[in-house]
Amino acid sequence: MADVIKVEGIKTLQQKLKLLEDGSQKKLRLVMNVAAEIVAQGARNLAPVKTGDFKASIRAASQQRYAVVAEGNNTNVKYAGAMDFGGNYGPQKSHHRAFFKEGRYLWPSVAHHRPEIQAVLEIELNKLIREVGLE
Image (cartoon, rainbow, N blue to C red; front, side, top):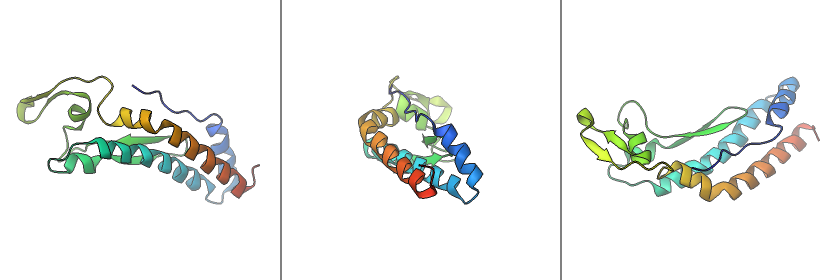
């Protein structure tokens, strides 16, 4: 499993942006979305396509200090965890997929795209800091 990517000083930046009261906090969330979308797109590229529901359920989301990539939903893709990491799924848990601790889609995408994600975060966060005059 890949390590989480941490941004040193993100909490301080978020607090300073909050003081500006000009919508800058939303820009920080959008920067995080860009990073999460890189992982989501990588995971979608790795995901199998039978009906396309699982692949379509992989999505990026963010808050001001972190980004996440989620897969599945509670309606037609309840089996997302089993698809990625293994386990029993389906009607009465009748289908089995071998357990794979590192996952098949999300964590491999993070590991593969780590340098790109780090570069994008550095560029976009520095750009945001310059835009709002916190340099």
